[in-house]
Image (cartoon, rainbow, N blue to C red; front, side, top):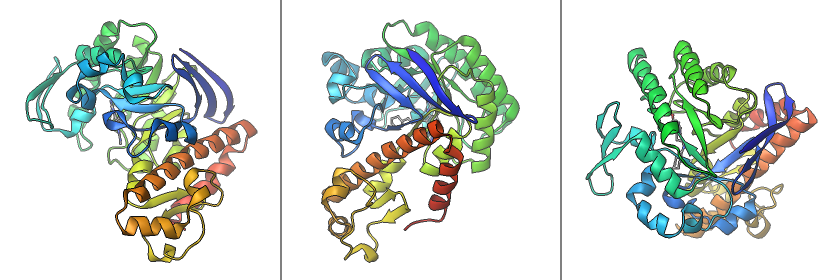
Length: 367
Ligand SMILES: CNc1nc2c(CCNCC3CCCCC3)c3nc(N)[nH]c(=O)c3cc2[nH]1
């Protein structure tokens, strides 16, 4: 894997990440695909929208359809028909929200949400599954503590994450795939620094900022990101897990983060909300009933080129899935274009102005 920082503007940076299945320009927004698909969008839609990398994850796929079926296809790229890079999460976080039967140093035993059976996940099993999936970027198996966890609980999860990171790297015997480490530490500055030093001491191809965007105050999200980034190497990609909205992404780019994933744009699309250059737009609202305008006149996506707000309002109102499909396509296209503008403003040295303008737009609510 090659990662090159091309331009910086303050802590914000533009980079190029060369992976087995293609090149990714950073900062990058990565559409999330649970169950080996980005909901309501085909790989062709994603390609047209300009997506360069998508996410999937170990936890869901090892349960259904199971590694065997994906192996049968020669890996996840073939299975889901996506030829560009894929990043897979390690499953550590996904089990975080499930009733955990047991979590100890060996690994996590949880109840399958599919059939209630007992499932065991460990660093070794997570690596074995991600190697079989053939994802370009694999994530170390980590323990993300709950958001309300006290210092001792976070300390224990952070120490375990370090031991599991060592075991993940040890078990990651594969060519043509890269492994990112994950930094924990909750909202405690000393644990954040310790975790960053521990994880970077192992040596990974890239580093993720974990354990955030799980309900903590925004100011803590930003402060913990700053502390973590301080101890990460300049020449490696930094991936903030699970964030986020356009305004959060701007704040994090400004603090030196390169990669982002979030279900947010596709989830709000399914609920009838579009992201536009003038803020959020609620297509369910009656003021869109008669509007002949496109969702966003500055957007070149298929939805904005071919349909009016009135038509999409009608589809949503009638519960037609086409309404959700058209908004999902628009929101992903918007996020990709948004990141194009982020990169351009960093290259032109105008990132702070762009950030200021877009944060005003997005914190003043909708259009
Ligand atoms: C939403 N906030 C948030 N997400 C986090 C995630 C998940 C990131 N998104 C992965 C996708 C989820 C849908 C299926 C495909 C993979 C985190 N993951 C890990 N391993 N560790 C975290 O601390 C960790 C922390 C996170 N915080």
